[in-house]
Length: 95
Image (cartoon, rainbow, N blue to C red; front, side, top):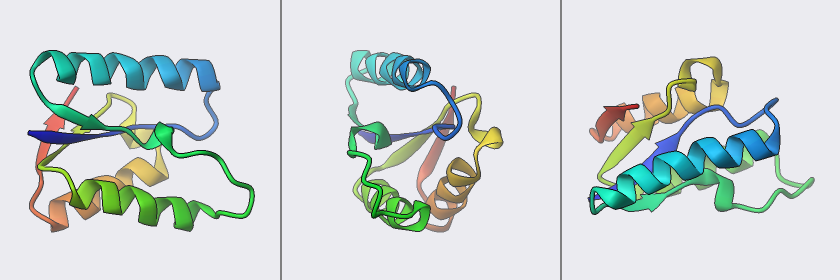
């Protein structure tokens, strides 16, 4: 199964974010899933939050499920990803 990982990124220390997403990625890989994570996209000053959301939506479209990190409710973007995934009938998995 292909799984997208969603969680809070903005306003957190980059090292902490990388650890959270890497932990989730390793967990899902160990279960035999292919994993897509939004932190692989480079940060460009010319791209808005909305631009990045379109990239994330495309990643969700390519997946079968979305894995919600525990902190997802603290993130406006992760809430949008959750709503988008639900609208596309993606399986939702909670950390």
